[in-house]
Length: 210
Image 1 (tube, rainbow, N blue to C red):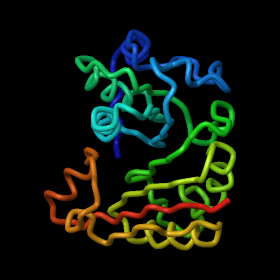
Image 2 (tube, helix red, strand yellow; image 1 turned 90 degrees about the vertical axis):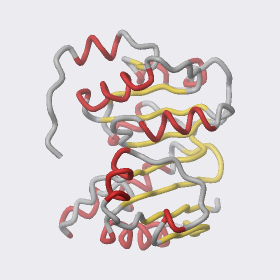
Image 3 (cartoon, rainbow, N blue to C red; image 1 turned 120 degrees about the vertical axis):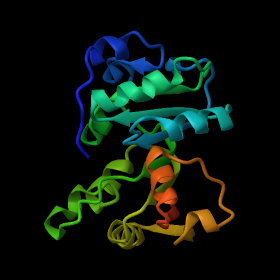
């Protein structure tokens, strides 16, 4: 994906109530960012925000955080929710490698939607569902870890199934064609595009028993 720089991205982000400029300052006090203390769900790589905005509307009894590495992408998410009145949604601009600098056993459910598949074998550990990242996630979950993943990439999906199983996760729900299933779902921007092209969406929900 080719990224286009957005003029005044920093100013747009920092002027929004949905953006948290220095998330590391909120470690161990993330609940203070929200109107109510509620279960906290996290999306890594939230992109332009369609999924998380939809989830925040659908589940007002859950607080949502989306992290995105690129500010020019995150600006689009911020712009989409400016006319909304959501008290259960925040966005951070940060890299997933920095998770432990912000989160400490806070998260109940983690979403990995259309993550970079890193298709070459030598890049396997860069995948967000690799053993490297799964060990990282162990430190951010507060209760029974739950990971939900959607992707259009069969290689990433197969790799995820293998790594999750190796790391103690039980696959509670798997679909090789999400949109032909009865699984409740909120689409991402990528998902809309792939569905229009007739591509199947792979889905899994994995739970780790402690």
